[in-house]
Length: 625
Image (cartoon, rainbow, N blue to C red; front, side, top):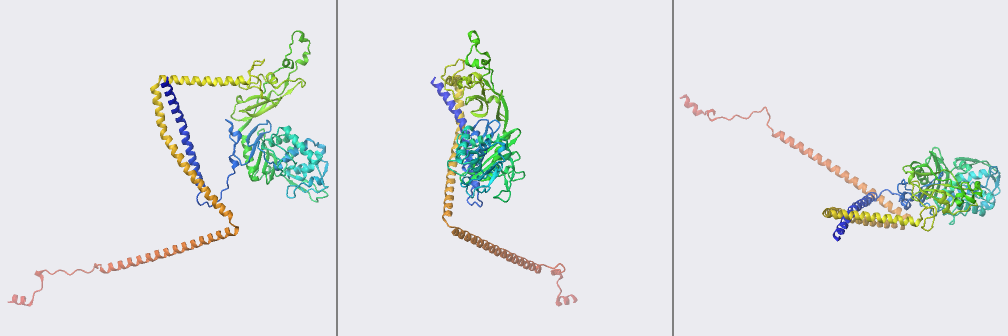
């Protein structure tokens, strides 16, 4: 038995090593590639300054953590979200509930509260700008320069708030609607609570910085969604230009131009599907932006908070909106409402003496609502992966991996009929089954694990049953594996040893790469430290010293260039002199050869043979004799 268990464990260890080692190897390779990219980017002498990527660019995107959810783009915004206005589904979420400063996108809430309390007949009413409304406005902030006592129409003030981001107009409208600034701010905070905002608090209607004036991307999407339901708001936010007629205090017409540049027809930041929005900026909040867009039957809103650069907010918002339009679709799913009546819900029996009860009242359906729920889900996701739940006492909610994708509000026909959430969900939602037939239970239920009267199981009992199934499944797998090892002991040992031997080279390679990577990281840290010291040295010097050093370096560079040119000229002259000397020597050599060469017309003297030598006079006399 011990031998079999030993072989089983050995084989499992070998399999685990075979699985982990390539992962470690590839991870080391990825690190090495990253270091290589760093080395290529940061050379010892960098001639060109590269802007450092903000830390927020790499922050976690919550929706990217969902399995099979489309991966959203990385952005520099410290808080960002994309919401489907029709279903309320958040399609993209990055740090969406973090407390951040909104700046002038606050004015969307100002418009929402104001328009809920202003009728169409009030739009042409003239309101007077009071000293209390204009006094808190900084002279260098955005405004239309209203004067104390000046009157403009409510309509003009509303356009000034959204198009020109006029802080003075926002205060004037706040006093007109709320009676006082403080009361209007209270109305803003009450509205935020009503909408379900989780991290929002306002202290003014314009958005100028205050530490107690904050919101988050999630809450701004909810506020923007509510405001977009108002027709006049949709009209104003989409307007590019608007004229405020001259007044007693202003002798010229005031022309307002919308700061939301994605609306422009032929601009650098044009987004053809844009339906409006609101920009914002303060030194503390940086750039903020809310953008509405409509395409293919979907209306989305994108919120970006704390971005360093207005142009970045436009580009990133366009990218996020494209992501929402391209990766998701609308779908109608069954709300699964049955025909349960008030009588059935109360347990009224229609037989015997109970039949004398008012059958008409008891026969009314307990819950009314749409037969379907609109959801926004990834294009490749099937609806049977969604789960249905019941929350807030009157809502059917569909979700995917806990992420809400759509909801529908129910109506109870008899408000006086009090039931608990658990009773309602059990009676009206057919046991809270999800779309693939499995039971999900009631949201927030903490009942005991006993089955209730309808036969459904409690939450704790379901958990225990689930854990038991996992345990039994693991034991069955282990038993089957042990049985196989027992029947194939030799094969199991051989396979285990082969796997271990195969892993040894990979482990060694991974170790060596990891060692090299550590050295590379150490060198990188040293390089960073050296750069930091250089930057500190530069920061410690005055402008005149830096200018003097730069001038000195330039002079040295010029001197080096002149010396190099002179050296090059000298070498060229030497080469020319050598060439002339060689040519001269070649000419002299040629002439010498020509003088020594025998001419072809001259013949060499013929040798006189002894028999042909001239005869002397003595010989001639002898011959005569």
